[in-house]
Length: 70
Length: 339
Image (cartoon, rainbow over all chains, first blue to last red; front, side, top):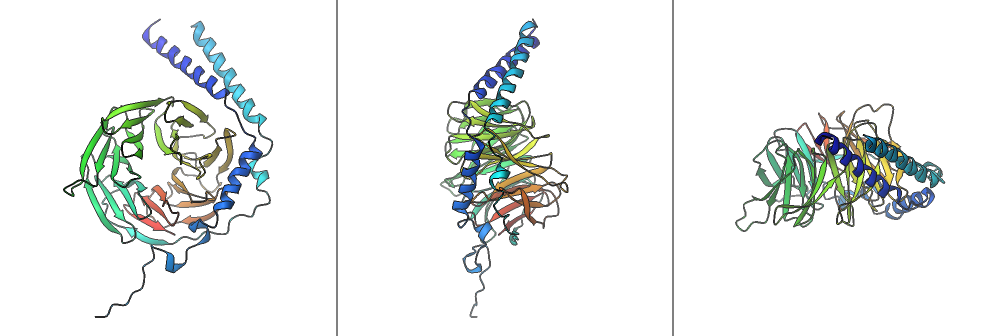
């Protein structure tokens, strides 16, 4: 067997080992997983400025209008 | 040749097992779960600041805190910006102008960049004499540096066109861990909020979740029909969002180990270049090749807004840690701050 062949076999062995590892994962039901995602969005919605909007006075990126006395 | 055939058969059988295990937990779809939830109202963000100064295409931007960000352009410069005032805090000339990524350390003490030079260069922003200098050049990748992210001031993770990701010790300049397994160029990476794992997206159309400390790939997600260019964690760390050349973004849930939702529209036919979730995760902002950025309702998979204003491809996007604004970077050489 030349080096190219044995390289392929090595890669194939590693791929199988990785797949074996991945089959052993404990998977959670989607109903539970989805509920968690939705709950997180709900819990943090008020604190999400891009979602709720930002008052002009508390927006650090808005130029504040100031008067300068010359 | 007998062993190859055997391994091929075993791989197919294991893949079938994984598919079956994923099906077994499909008691509900995300769509079913949110059937009663209203779509988020129209999101209209305005450009609040335009950061001008780069002379060529911008390839990357990364927020350090909620005010300072660093951008990288193929004009051969890294610029650190005060986004509140649009002032340039630092303008760092690079040895190689073919930069593809940049990162700001969480501490604010350093920035990093890299690209076609195959290296990740670390710059100390807080040097004694006030000058910003190269602190370390991390060289070992045999392909371009596509992305880098600091874990802390002494550790950084890089992704490369050589199909691997690497965890580096910055002090010694050595590779602590090599994460091998992708079958195509690694294009992007994201670190989990708890810093225990990271995700990578690659040109083999898959995303992989890696354990930072033991180097193992824990999960692999397929489904995209082309290169994954952008990847990020949903803010609670339990889901991964990807953006691809197949014009779609997908959300993969880590605990049920599968794709829950795809963000696509028949009217969008160009690749996704970048993405970032809003603070609550309810919005996903994604940059596209068609010069726009689309805002998606992450739970209902509907487009709820558009950011238009760039005159060329949106190449990078980032939301501030406090969620107050997002920054888009473009091949038109400008960065825009929106909220």
